[in-house]
Length: 353
Image (tube, rainbow, N blue to C red; front, side, top):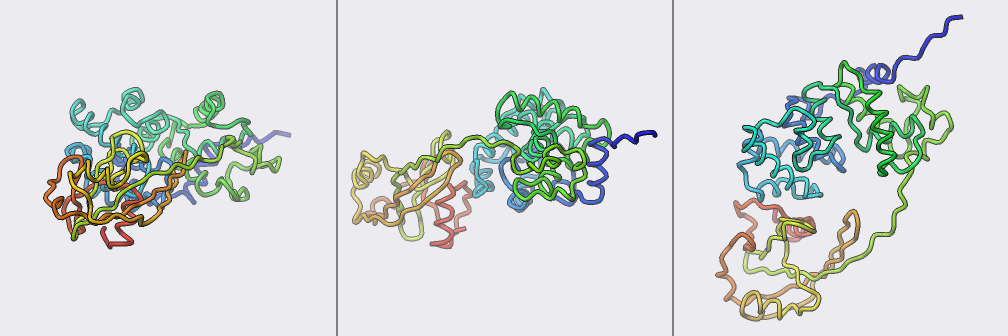
């Protein structure tokens, strides 16, 4: 009896995609290298439903790479406020400026050229070239890693170089020569909607017939997890300073926590709030009180902010705005990037958008 061979992984996946794939994302309307690049950067470690409204507003304000390059970093960070992982926004702007200057505002359309740009690695470059140009390049984002580690029952944490090398080889072997853009979207969709982190819907999976983890009933065991330590708790002091309808903010250093964003001024633990105030403004506040405690989670640590409130002396009202400090008004036309706890507090407590 003649044996009927199973259709290839990519053929089965594309058949499923034609019926069930996601084809109405805003960055799919006009698949340019620029729009795919912006969407891929936003989607790093961020869910699609969160990204969509940010992407729409971003593209309206910065419809082309040249417009993005000519915008101020503050304006870019303003559009990114609340999306998190702000190094992505800084790299996006840095890359736009570099490409605008060196490549006439056109992203390089080759793997080597893209990977030389800030914030673009192999998987992001592959997605840009595959989705916008239909070039044959594999991708290996979180969703794709999960699909392949289960399908091939790959042992070890996917973050390890040795495991990543194995997964890249699998990704390369399964990427077809035809319909590369559709396949790339399909493999991401499979991981996002079917082969999910918890409660995967294996009965609906188009490649379940030869999925090793599924055949063993071990879907929950893959991918193997990294042994994570409990995040350390850090504390800091900040000052909320309001004069009439203006709130005093300072720009954070370009590197580190909330790099380049605007925040309530941070006060060293070995300095009293009143002494800091005097050293900054040359006078003492009329009154200082401990006001609120804010909590914020980062990927590698938790932060507790002790927020103090000061009643300022009228003399500080004439301090002029500059590149490192400003008096922010709720109706201001100045568009700046705000650190997440600052943005949340201003929105909820003072109706400042």
